[in-house]
Image (cartoon, rainbow over all chains, first blue to last red; front, side):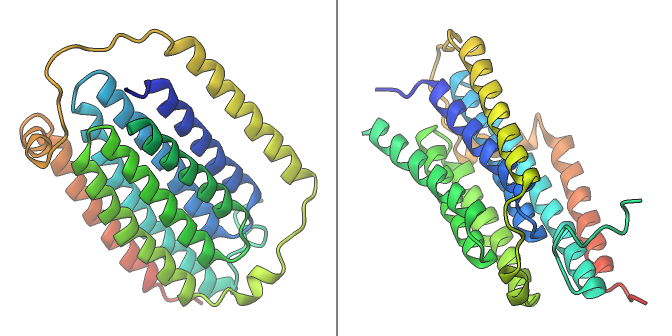
Length: 101
Length: 166
C-alpha cells in the first residue's frame, strides 16, 4: 500500500510550522538557526515527495542544491554568531539590537 | 510495512522537532534536531531517494550538526540558558500566528493536491548513478555555481572568524 502524497505534504507543513514557532519564540540565536534548518528540511521533504509523485528526479536534484545552500548558510551564520559573541558576550537575540535603530 | 514505517518516522520527526523548540539547553536542542534529521532521512528512503537520504545524513547529521555542537560548546552558554525570558504577549501571539500558518497550509493542501495525477511509467529510483548523470549533464551549470557559492562562504566565514574587534 502506498502512502498518498498529501500525508507527506501535511507532515512537511507541520515540521515547517514547528520551525516557525522555534524562530519566533526562542531567544537563543543558535536555536533560532536550528529552527531554520528544520524549515529547510521540511521544504526538502516536499521536494522529494513531489519527485516521487511525478516520477522524475528533478526534485531530488533541487534537494541537493538546497543542502549546499544550507551548508554555506550555516558556516557563515555560525561565524557571525561567534563574532557577535566575542563582541557582546551574548547570543540572545533580545540583546543584539545594534542594527535596530 | 511502509505505512507503519511512515507513521513511525513521522511521529519521531514531529515529537523530536517539538522537543527541539521547547528544550532549554541548546545541546539537547541540537541532539533532538539530529533525531529529526534521521527520521526525515528514513522518509527519503521510503520515497525512493536512497542517495538523498545518505547525503542528508552525511551533510546534516555529520557536518552541519557537528558544527552546531562545536559552536555551542565553544561559546559558554551556561549563564544564557538559565535566564530565558518567560512567556509574555509576543510568545503567545507568535504561537497563534504559527497556528494560522499551519491552518493555511492544510487548507491549501486539501484544495490543491486532492486529485494530483500519478505519472505512469517506469519507477525511477534516485540512485547515485541516476543523480550523478543528471548533475553532470542537465544541471552542470548550477552544479558549478554551487562550487563558487561554497568557496565564497568558506572565505566569508574565515574572514568573519578572524575579525579583529575593537
